[in-house]
Image (cartoon, rainbow, N blue to C red; front, side, top):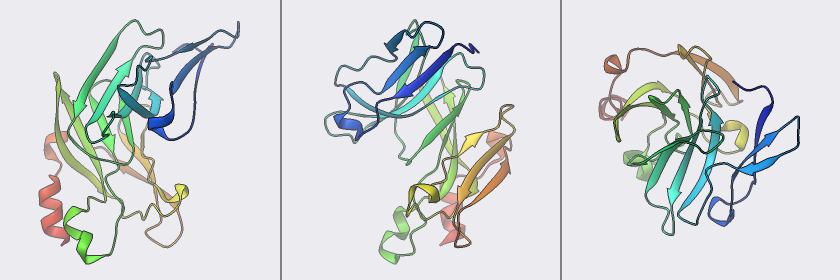
Length: 196
């Protein structure tokens, strides 16, 4: 990791932001775009990987925003890995280049929405240019009513745990779950069948 490097974002509706991710060299004040955007992808949820060598991000292909993408870019733009990601989650994070973590959808109690709900922390494993999964790491049961009630899940520095928030008890609290081996985790279909 480079302690002289910071990133910041141009915040706003993703599709309206011309350039989301920026780098800043603290010692010189130099500023540059990271993952230069050309109108093809609305980007958000950027974060450094655990080793500080890459920046992971989630996006939606423009103009329809129905196809998701997940990518990694080096802070100097020298290398980029970006693939379409056929899964929907509200927020994503990553641990290295091999795992992505999504927070699914809100836990909505409306019966008409039950078949579409995925109120889980979902783990995805990169497999070349595609992703395996999702597998369910935890049932977050968060409402997403306010920003503080979004899970905003993150891996621990060693990748063995995930920390997230949930308002399942009425107030937002912080929870930690151990990361089990990917192939041992249940599928979304298995969890949906058990939950409904």
